[in-house]
Amino acid sequence: MQTEQIVSSLLESNTFVAKKSGECLIVDAGATPDQVAQKVGNDKVMGLLLTHGHYDHCFYALEITKKFGCKIFASKKIVENLTDPAKNYGETFKIEDFSNFVFLEDKQEFSLGEFEISATLLPGHSKCSMGYLIDGTFFAGDVLFGQGIGRTDLYGGDKHEMLQSLITIQNNIAFDILASGHGEMSTAEKQKRNLNLFIRFLSR
Image 1 (cartoon, rainbow, N blue to C red):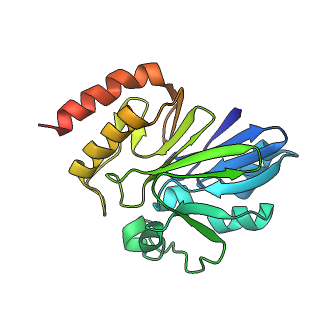
Image 2: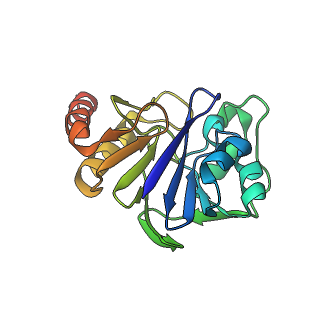
């Protein structure tokens, strides 16, 4: 699987296009549909996965799925954020039509074309944070970064839930590559130290 990264103008959030055998998945929607289309090329878009409900990761979700004719996959908990600008931090941004959404449960495994996906609910940065393990690449949203972890002081954030989510990642999610919601991609080897550091910090 080949993963293409787009750094958006919305708080420099990452949108990813994962490509395999003429098909692709889009992860998060901070980049414009035209930016995404440049990475998609002639591949068939199988779906858009949202890691959580902050505006910089969801702003173009409806436009992207309209352009490519695909569904949006996310935790059902995302509805609370997307319907309230005060909770997604997008000033006036909100989504009210969820007819194109497919809501996922914690630890749900499913297939989209050639892609086998494992979705895990990882609260701490937000109640709706969900990570996706696809072919050894872990799309973590804003839970885990290359050199840090996500904020826990925003709406729905909780440091105790973040601690449990980091332990879940460390013990239960066997990834090779980390693709975060902001910053550069990282590796499992580098994340061993990162996870240990922040698990110790949050355990105090």
